Image (spheres, rainbow, N blue to C red):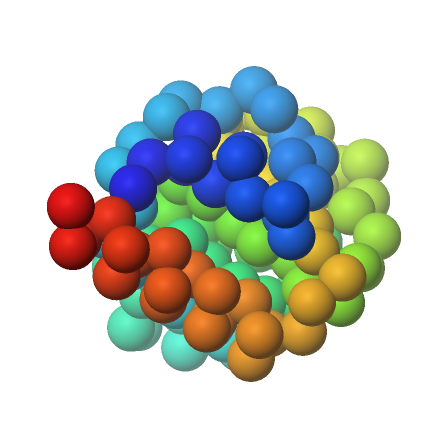
Length: 114
């Protein structure tokens, strides 16, 4: 699955559109950025409620190319600008983190079944 594949998902709204397409091989869900740094993988999509610029810095450090912000949290302008600079896609959703994790898991399983 690629980041562009995520743009076709009805439950996700693309907020930051200037990104480098990349293959997504897994997902990671956490709100503790130190946990993300320690355990997320470069090819994961990060699911979180942390809608601020520090999340972009952590994503860049880990090599995460896409974020999904849960619970319809507002994306602040400085976060969007940092993501644009780093070419990291940002999606938002009205779904909570659990439901988003299940959704991404299902999409990944369907993609692997092909």
